[in-house]
Image 1 (cartoon, rainbow over the protein chains, first blue to last red):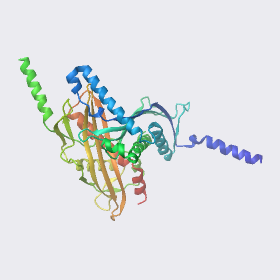
Image 2: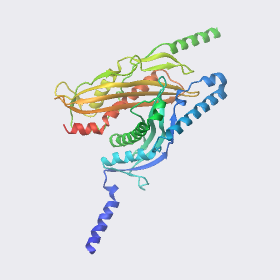
Image 3: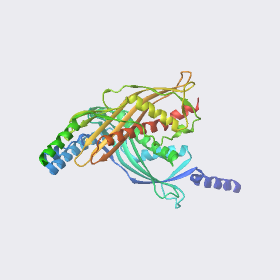
Length: 202
Length: 194
C-alpha cells in the first residue's frame, strides 16, 4: 500500500513537472488583446471630408464612417458564436508548439533561461480587402516579440492573416456558418503561424 | 517664375496619378522561408505550372486620388503566375529541396488573387497586398499527393508611398504566401508518406 502511494506520488510529480521534459519552454505574456471589429467604411475612406471641411471635415467623415462600421459590427456580432480573438490564437499557438515538444506557460518561469513571447493582438474581425469591389474577409493582425536567452534584442514578428474567401458585406450577414468558419480559421492560422515562426526561426 | 514652377509640379504629379504603374514584384532573395517542410527528406520538384484565374487579370491594383476614385491601373512587370512559380521554387529550395527535371513532384495550381489596395486616410495611407493561390501536388506517377489553398498578405501604414513602397508590400505578400506553403503541415504529412 505504501509502495503504491510512493509510485503514485512519483508519477504525480512527473506530471506536474511536465513542461521541464519538453524540448523547450515558451513563456507567454499577452500585452494587448484586440476586440472584434469591422473595418469596412473606414477601409474605403478618402480625403473628401478634409478637402471640403479641413480638420473638422476630416473628423466628421471619420466619425460617420466609424459609426457605420459600428452598425456593421453589431450586425455580425449577432451571427458569431464566439467573437473573442486572443484565446483561440493562443490555443492554436500552444497546440502547434506542443507538437514540436515546446510547452507554453502563462506565468513567469522566474529564470532567464526560457524563451519569452510577448504577444499583442492588434486587430481582429472582418475588413474590406478590395476597395474596388467592396469585398471583405476575416483578418487578424498581431505582433510578437520573442526574447531568446542570451540575445539582447527581441526578435519581432508581424503576423497578418486574412481569410480564404472574400464576401460582400450583405453575404457576410446572411451566411452565418461561413463567417464563423472564416473567423475561426484566421485565428487558428495566426496562432499556428506564430508557433512555426518560433520553432523554425529562432 | 515661382507660380509657373508650382503649376509645372502640379501637372507632373497629376500626370503620375493618371498614368499606369508597373511594379517589379518578386519574392525577396533574403526572405527566410524555412518551415516544417524542411523536416521532409529532400525531394525534387518541377517548376509549378500555374494559371491566372483572377476575375480581373489586367491589373494588380488601382491608383486612387484623395477622393477614393480610381485614376489609373497598377500592373506587374511579369505575369503573376510566373512571379508565384519562381517564389514557390525558391521556398522549396530554401527548405533543402531541389528543382528537378525527372522523377520529380509536379505542381499545378491557380492564382486566385493578386491585389494591391490603398486606404487613403487624412494623415496616413494604408497599403495592403494580398496573394492567394490553390496548388495540387502530384507524384512522379501522377497520383495526387496533396492539394491546398494558400494566402499571403502584408500591410503597412505610412504618411505616403509610391511605387517602391507598393512593390515592397506586394513582394512581402508573395513572401508570406510562400511561407504559408512551407508551413502547411498537411503537405508535410503527405510528403512524408511518399
